[in-house]
Length: 326
Image (cartoon, rainbow, N blue to C red; front, side, top):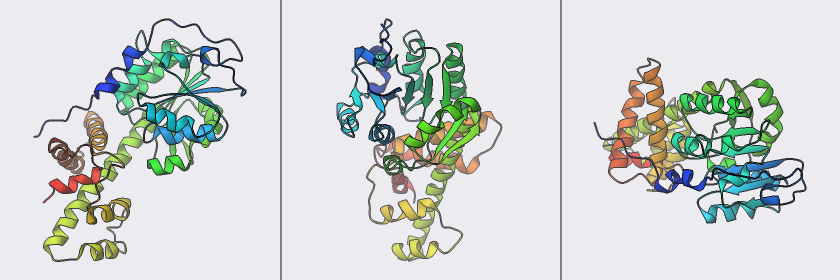
């Protein structure tokens, strides 16, 4: 078995160093740092990369007051340029006075590092505020965040996303919400600005698990598609014909329609990175194993992703697993 790639990004793992233990909360009617805001609700968004950026820009385009933080200055600038109501902050602690804080980060450890512990943002946020995580994390971490928030009288929703950065940009990102029903009902209007449809899944474990299962199915399907395309090559079937005719069979899938043509054209530009896909498949397989599920096909897909990452394809699109399938 090939070793699991190390996904602890150096820049992300330094987030705890950004947080400071002391803070003076803004006065009523002011945002962080005493900045005056017109609106009646102040939002914070941590992580405005491929997925989070589109969501945060939707809020700003809708005229919502949004404090924006990311380790990438370029990502922050792109987000606040979406309208007149976004403001960059230099430190995460400046979001402590927000009514609602969103996180969209690559790893469960990133989310925990920012929100939990002695210097975590949850310890600085005001009682009665709401924390919404839209990252792809495991059910255990989702429960840990929920319990930590509740202990501080902060509402929590785990809201993983269903499609791509392109859908996020157009506010067409499906949102699968988990948490207390009354918190969901209170937050539904804000979530519908971010994306649609907004679906209540039940407890936080349910929404976190649903996202991992979705990615397990999608990425395992991508592995099977890649195997099928390799077999079709051996059979002498022209690649574009193979994809086109497969659409009229039981082999039709999202991966076939979207990533099939990219593979044929040698297009491995990063839309959903292979290392992130590996992280999701790994978390999903660990979840399945903890619950006593075999997930044999999914574990085979996991080995393809591990191999592709080990060979240096981690920053390419997840369809780069095609390169290691023979």
